[in-house]
Structures are given as C-alpha cells and as structure tokens.
Image (tube, rainbow, N blue to C red; front, side, top):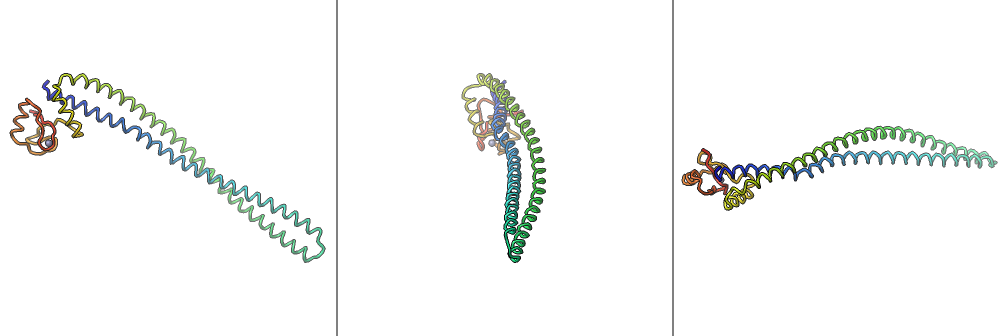
Length: 233
Ligand SMILES: [Zn+2]
C-alpha cells in the first residue's frame, strides 16, 4: 500500500470512531428524553390524585356540616319543648325547616361530588394502567440503549486497537498533517480529485496541483479548503 492508501484506510477507521463516539455521547440525552415521557405521565397521575383528595375532603366537609346541622335541629327541638308562646314555637319551626333544607341541599351536593369522584377514580385507574405500560416501554427502551452503549464501547475499542496497529507504518509528518486536517474539517482529511475539482469543496484546481497529486510524492492540500488531495485513476 502507498502511504496515501494507508491514510485512506486510517481515515475510514477515524470516521467510524468519530461516528460511534458521537452516538455513544448522545445516549445519556436519549435516555433522559425517554424518561421525560414518563415524567409527564407521573405528573398527570399526581394531578388526578390531588383532584381525588380534594373531592374526598369536600365530601368530608359536607358530612361534618350535615352532622352539625342535625345536632342543631335536636337542640331546636329541645328549645321548642320548653316554649309556651305559639309565635315563638312557629319561629323555631321555621328555623328547623330552614336547617332541614340546608341538610337536603348539602346531601344533594354530596351525591354530585360522589358521582364526580367516581369519574375521577376511573380516570385514575386508566392513568395508572397507562403509566405502568409506559414504565415497561421506558425500561425496555432504556435497557436497549444501555446494550447499544455496551456494543459501541466494545466496537470502539476494537477499531481503536486496529487503528493503533496501522499508524506505525505511516511517516510521522504525514500522519500529523493528516490528523490536523481531519480534526479541522470535521468530515474528511483526504479527498479525491474529481475531474479537476477538489472532492471536498468542489473548487477548480490549478493543473499543476493535479499533476503534483498524480505523482503522489508529497501531501498536497487544496488551496481553498485545506483538505489533502489524492488521485484516483
Ligand atoms: Zn477543497
């Protein structure tokens, strides 16, 4: 293999390393995104639980009010028993009726609240079911990502070892220049000349450059983008 050919193989490994490393780095963010999906389900569930709590405490409050009013009626009846005047008796009777009316209204409200509570409870059950399903999916997806990460790490180790075995064969100055350009461009360090144009930036190259690249005696860069040129017959 010529040095350029060796560098092309190296570039292939380096691109693979770059791609796999990027995927590896993205995994924590992807896991976080999956867990976010779970958070929205949990949040929804918590809201429904709160709604149910409010419903229960409103019912409790009505029951307390009804009990208080029932006691009040008992007291008013006692008072009635001790009263002599008809007028006062009727006034107490009116008060008792009014309290009884309050009790009936409160009990109506309680029934409405209990019916609403049933609906909230049904919704809660649905949400618990869907959260449990989502938890399963998240656990499965998360485990798949962990497995993927394990495979990526193993693949990276293999490719890096492979790469380390190659670089000894390449002249140090060519290697350093290749690595600098590879880091700088973010895609390719080596590009073929394609019909008198640079394969990286697609600018027209001077004929002399193409001639020198064909000879392959030194590393020649594109004057526009800095990528190293090679000739592909
Ligand atoms: Zn170029």
